[in-house]
Image (cartoon, rainbow, N blue to C red; front, side):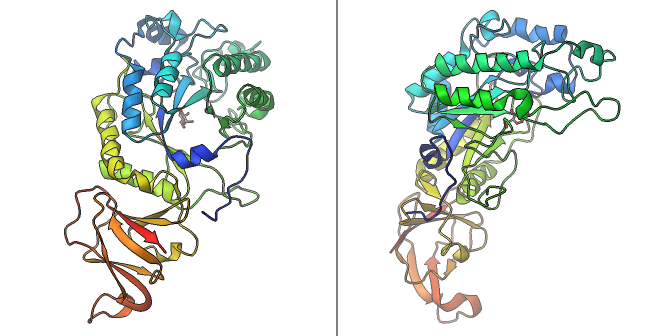
Length: 440
Ligand code: GLC
């Protein structure tokens, strides 16, 4: 068994850590402008102008079953879907607003279709819910609000009542966690209690747990869905730590206690969460696989984002990126599911340009080759510890020797505790080849 103790939290995180790989879905009205889900903030778009997206939102090609099949094929075990993003538009049939998909040409409850389809494929289901709301008339204007630079922003802000908005969120979370069956993850986004508008604009205060009334919101969620996993972004520590758009190099720890925590990296295929037609920093296939591997090698999950188009499809770039995972996971998922950071006594053996993962039961060690070495892989400290070695993708034996590479070995290529794996000269046809070691 893995010797790592992970900090205990109220949610049921065991399935989550075993799953390791999920799909984030950012879908909303911002798919129409197709230039970032923050477009309303970036362009300070007036309400009347943004309304055009509401009038023309018609995702006629949306087939949630197709999405679910693609997620599953890519090896993803769960998904998190934006039920409402910062723009405030609801992708579900809420009784507390008219600003919802059922009132657009879409005319259907898009969340319902997502839930049904993903569950039918055997995937766990999560909801993203934005705490920030750039449409709700009671949401006080602040530094990231689209109206922040209006000359009459101060006047517009008068009479806005955060308490009314906080109640609105509770009402909607109640709907989301009551009307759609079992929900596995609730992903609140996000808090900025310390930000304000600077000199003269101090009244543009950021928002955190006091404004959101996070304690009530979370208590409600836990009452409605015991066991649900909740992230930390409501400015209250819960089950899930969420490093965004960067790769960690060691297991994320609790700030005060130093304990290991349950964490999930979220990443995009390109530089935007929502569908972005003209953004072109799409990650290479190799980088995608490395991000997944690196994440699991540090004991975390990867939540990989797709931004569907306004018509309700994953565009060809997104589909190709998913296929990269599909192809690699077909052969190598054993080094991902139910795997975690290698044991502390094994970690020092890590060869250059590699990542380890180890099965939760401790019996198998996986070496991921980020750069393919010539001829031999040297594992210092591993002599006598491995019963059998093979490539994971084809189950072909990797012959082992101990003590030295050969008669001419010198320096690091020699030593009583040295395990030598003899590799073919030609790199197997695998973006990141994986070696599976059966430990004694
Ligand atoms: C950020 C962004 C948001 C995105 C999220 C995903 O908080 O505000 O657009 O949804 O990250 O993690």
